[in-house]
Image (tube, rainbow, N blue to C red; front, side, top):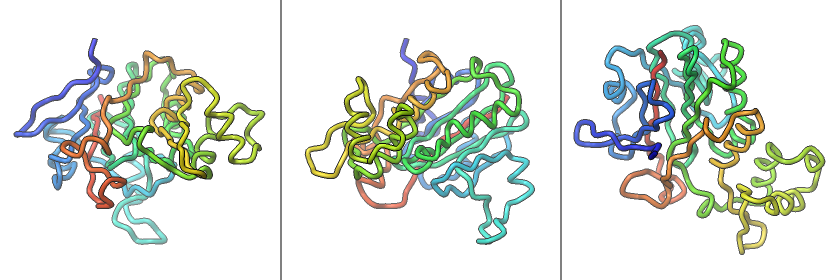
Length: 263
């Protein structure tokens, strides 16, 4: 069965995943630009309350209650709370994240109905933003066996070149315990030797091809989620310019949005 489908809406289309069928959700494309979540959520649930944050490539996880209590960051006076993951705390909350090569991750709990939306770039992935989010969901009553995870369009590992230092920083989150203190280059080589590794060889010295999507999958499997609970969109933001913005491709700060509504 095909897990990913395009849904038409107002002359454009957005991507959905069968795993998340119980929840209104969508991974939107560049055709949604410059619309905001406040308008895009009309494609999902016209009555849902939109929730979003100021993304900062970290691992902070917040709820709509947190957002309501602290919409102005005390040090920077930003109008939105700084975080990279949202977890619902009531029904009909529309959670949104934006991306332009980083992985947008949407999660649903088949038992409680709660949801999560995560912005997982390499920095957030190195800080385990997805496991941190799941821990928050567990604190609110979720069980691992009830979770389903969809990772939306992001840059593919085959075209994402990073430094050995970056690859090692991210790779340490999935490395065997006996390699955690290994020097960067040796750690990368050890991880590349593992079958199906998210770290691929790059012919340029000091460089590695890194699949951040797959690192997040490995982190999820380490938590105990099965392969059947996780799916990755078969699309690359870098290689599909007609559909997606890509910061690595153009250097422009334009994004596509991904959202999910809690039950």
